Length: 314
Ligand code: NAP
Ligand code: GLV
Image (cartoon, rainbow, N blue to C red; front, side, top):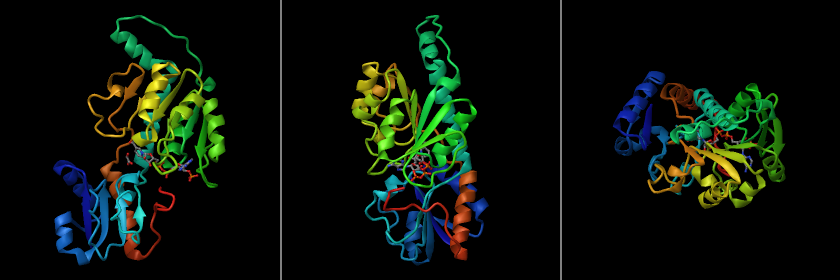
């Protein structure tokens, strides 16, 4: 069983993935792109992490593309991606748990003013703020899929008032979380939210969704947490909303260009807390288990899990 493993990892990361994948799927041989081209007629699956465009060309027997990333907008943007081969995205309970932790840290820090406390410490200022109970803080989670549902559940358990926004009829049911569906439901939800967390996939419908109109709909003094993709945000509009004080803070994990260029205003903006795209990293061990399950399903002719619906883009 020959499988192409390729992506934007360095040698050490590749070795870490190889170790985990070999342990989870000992019956497979893992080929790099050059080897895969030599043995092209034997390669049945490809396991990829943000591969360079064109990496999946020239493999006539390919029957599964398994992404190691949850978000697949980069793969779908590659015009050479074979259209007839099923594409599965990474769904990993360890990633969902990590995302829920990041969302909880961001919401707790915003609600309790801990980012302001850290800034006051740097300025040598003793400044106390009024506290309010979690049950008075309204949080909106945009996207109630794997990541959004895990975050919403964790926040509800922590006592926050949580509402979620999604698109189709069959969202994950999250106990205690009010569901809002359809485009029209977004503005009223934003208008009543103290904190908005973005966990949408990046698609034609969601690119640049977080723009001036979006921020203006949020109440004065509210905060935004973007844990999904940089291209969801119009940076200039977010900076304007922060500069004017309309938004009190932004927690940003993802950016248009990563690493975030040194001169970008987000780096030093007093109302921005940023992370280097670490909200939920793929864990090689649990992800390898998910890969092995899908490859074995392929071999047995069983249904493949977590297939991307290319038409809708996630
Ligand atoms: P998912 O399970 O596919 O969930 C996507 C959710 O978004 C679903 O609830 C879906 O609604 C909703 N949605 C999609 N398009 C929408 C639209 N136009 N309007 C309203 N709702 C819409 O995806 P996931 O696994 O939770 O991952 C979400 C994103 O998180 C990924 O695409 C990736 O960009 C990002 N991510 C970031 C990190 C990080 O470290 N920062 C790590 C992993 C993932 P329906 O179900 O109703 O269709
Ligand atoms: C990370 O951002 C992912 O999509 O897995």
